[in-house]
Structures are given as C-alpha cells and as structure tokens.
Length: 181
Ligand code: CUA
Image (tube, rainbow, N blue to C red; front, side, top):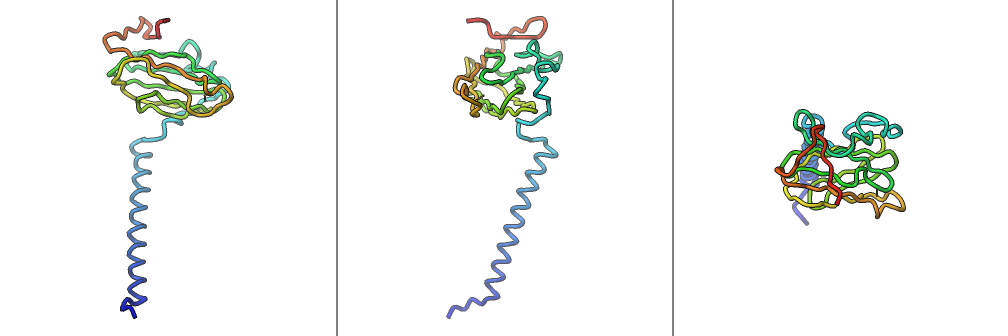
C-alpha cells in the first residue's frame, strides 16, 4: 500500500490548478496590455477603408501611390494589392531610414512579405495594413503575394528597391519612384 493519501493527491492537484491559473492569467494580461496600452496589434487591420471606392478616396488614388516623403520627413510607400498585381510594381525606398508601408486592396485577401526582412502582413479588403521597418540591405528585394488570391496568384509580385540613403533623391513634390530599367 502506498502511503500517499487521497487528501495529498487532491492537495497536489489543487496546487497545480492554482499554478496553471496564475500562469494563464499572467499571459492573458500581457496580451491585453500589449494590445490596449502599447498598441501592438496585427499590422493587417490598422484602419478601416471602403474597398469599393478605394481608388477614388484620397489616400489610395493612383496619383498618390508609391513613395512619398511627407512634410515631417516621414517616408511612406502606398501600395494597392489587386488581382493579380501590385500598384506600383516597384517602390523605391532609402536604406537605414524608418519607413512606413501602407497597403490596401479593392478585391480579395492578399498577403505580402519582403524577402529577407521582417515585413510580412495580410492585406484584407476593408482595412489598411501598415508596416514600419528599417531596411538595412540595399538592392532589389522581392515582394510576392503570399496568400492564394486566385488563378494569377503565382504571378503577383512586386519589387522593393532599397537604395543607399545618399542616393535617395525625392522630387520637389516629395515623390520617389523606381527609374525605368
Ligand atoms: Cu494576391 Cu496572391
């Protein structure tokens, strides 16, 4: 006969239940704190936008797509992901500079990643996706669509052309685009 009584077993189980409950509570509180207080949220749903008049509304009209240096110096690239292409197909961005990439789609769910970097987000109709990053390497980085979006999915890719900071010369309107090759 074992000298462990039923009472000891119950007590051990209760101890483990308390440890588990406290651990789960700490993790849940950390998740809620990160989201509500630190504003760390998935990059795919930062803002709502109407997908039906995306191309007519201010931010994602064709003339406003691509890279723009804002008045405050913030570098922002705006891209529309649509079946089955990105507009524009190439964005020019400076290295070693904080940059913001904002994306939206008028049709279905797409996803993007910039190869070799931490840029990775879904692009969901009805929302603006936003990623902030600093590119450390220069060169042409491939940006494929990584969410199956239809028959042309495998053909859907763009280029992020990262140039040294010294070689990044936006025009007087603050815009910069990939030179034709
Ligand atoms: Cu867009 Cu796959």
